[in-house]
Image 1 (cartoon, rainbow, N blue to C red):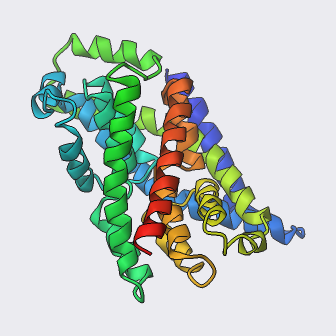
Image 2: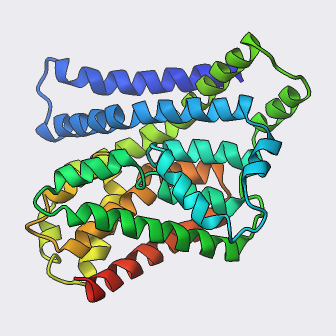
Length: 327
């Protein structure tokens, strides 16, 4: 396992140094490559602090939270657990990538699958940081922030309920060598300093494990932002059916953390309708290119495909209803 960590660390360091060093290379480089480099670094610098929060939260859960503790705080009736789980999402101010690590660890500790799903889709939006950034970005239209929070709350409940109907509480995690390590640790009770050493061990292991997926997703997202002609978006901006779908796809590929995406959305406020901007603000934090890659790495493929489909249909449907009824 140490060799695997070493190779992952070396690969991540090599890629980051390559992108950091590009501006200092003396020979002439195409502007598109420099822009690609800038996009890459901006997404990485934005995402990695939250990834660090996620891996340490995951490691603390692994070390200090027992299966009995998780079961004690979850209502036995799965339907009664949906609304409280959505409310708890407000207390998890982590981005869409980091929440996957936290939820995966909680699922291993016995958290019901549909409750974990609610955390996955709710936590990246339903927290005070995202509300504040959205409110600030749309100062001339503060209702956008309230609409984002309200629709995200409803979506978390709907998606959690649908996924419960489809999968009940069956295990959808992929098995890994970490399961063997965890099983061995559980046979020996850790105390004092050994617990904190275990926290840092798990955190470093998970950081380099997830880091390669984040970097790969960031490279693809940076290439899209660099070479995609945004003028194409304007041509569909007036269509109330197509425009939300286009902005959802834009949010998926752009892969911007939910704490900052409102500022991108506000730049399109004179081009796209409120419904289309909400589709961007709701879909991106729930599902983007980076976290889709991480989901496929840690969860069974069939589950991830269905999960992505449910999110897509639910967000599109609720935006259409909001446009028709409210707007």
